[in-house]
Length: 291
Image (cartoon, rainbow, N blue to C red; front, side, top):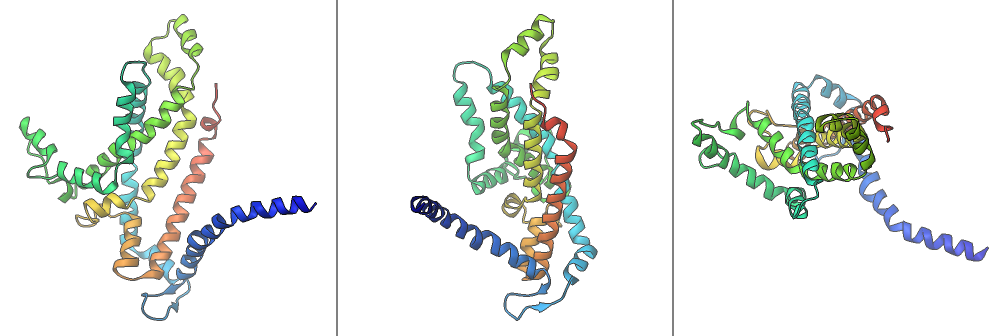
């Protein structure tokens, strides 16, 4: 009996650092933000209780809705990114010499520093000496000022995100592709199926759980978009690339509206939670598909 108690105490002792870390760095800040959402506080004066005024202000805030639309616009890149990742995964699933090198090359953007990637793409998008406009000029097209244009800034950010995230999603698709048994393709060949029919009737449906996981994580990731906006456009031009998280950052650390920033944070949490529940509910049949 004493030995069992001692073993249990030892186990709890090993768990204690993680539990303390969760309480101090996750639970307490989350709880504090919930409390702050009912206060008006500028970091320097005494917090003033305002009830649900911050949430009422949020509903009437035209900038919040504009930046929410910006955030939703960035989700247009999700299906494009998934298609690119799947194409790369199919290419990287071939048994050819040197394939490990190519897999490493395509995965490199994922492990590269966000700052380095942002600086690289700022050079690519530079209207005067950038790579993209240089290539366009070679075919007689004058490229726009990508990051300074309200029309092109969002597509430019989407393109960069597709490039940076393609390697990670490619790895997920590659693992799923290698789990599909060969006998399914062999049986399809006996029935006379061509490459397209094998892809559409075998590969794509059996990747459904992977599609589901990537969609869930990508939607959550887009809702949390901040780093690339901070580094490349600063939310401009004219707020055309400002996202919800960037608006939270501005309210909290630029304008010191800590209570309102907390209210927006909880609204964002509700949006992510609701979107995840809807996806979970309406994609159940794809999630459970197996061979």
